[in-house]
Length: 242
Ligand code: SF4
Image 1 (cartoon, rainbow, N blue to C red):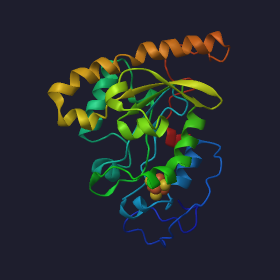
Image 2 (tube, rainbow, N blue to C red):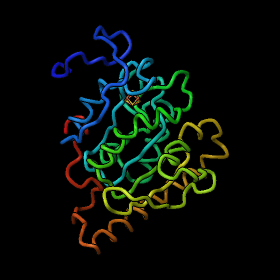
Image 3 (tube, rainbow, N blue to C red):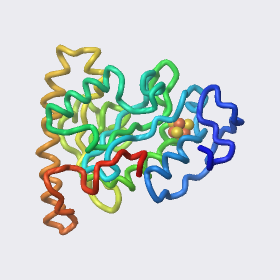
Image 4 (cartoon, protein in one colour):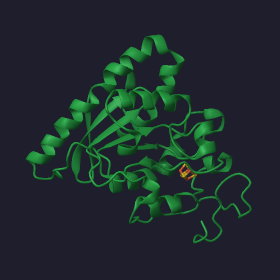
């Protein structure tokens, strides 16, 4: 970004690479401001292998926030989460359940592609955590959906995705309890489609009723927005535009 001096974005960038930046992540006024800072991040070793940081996308105040594991090759190339083969399956599941990609928010536990698509290491997840928490604070969703083990254990370290998948859990964020629906990762479904796809379809179908229950709880507590049928509360602009 022109307004951030010496911003090193990824492989081949001529700007100097300085590891460990930024040391602290300031509270951002918007997702756009957050992602402009995040584009220059070198807080963990995943920075060295990336083409670019893959920021979250979707409605800036979506009611549903999906959290996956890490960008893959296609995501790294295009700078958008869930756009490869797993992303196409994810989009299909969204559509079948009456959601559009633009009205939910989609992000990952880390925003840079791990080499060879390996699992992100604990120290990388820790380094990225303030960026993820800022996204959670700014989007302030009514329901969280984790995709796979790494996203689930970020919130519930002792949970096993094979045991709790499709069963709503609860986490505390933004001063309130938020329902969390653990799902398998779409990439895992692709590796064992015949066995896992029917389970994923059943689990995914639990999202709509869970969202309706979360909305009525919020309404009863006086915290609801009274929004219409759209699940996006305050517009559905892309997060990068915010
Ligand atoms: S994964 Fe997150 S913390 Fe690590 S370099 Fe990328 S943006 Fe920074």
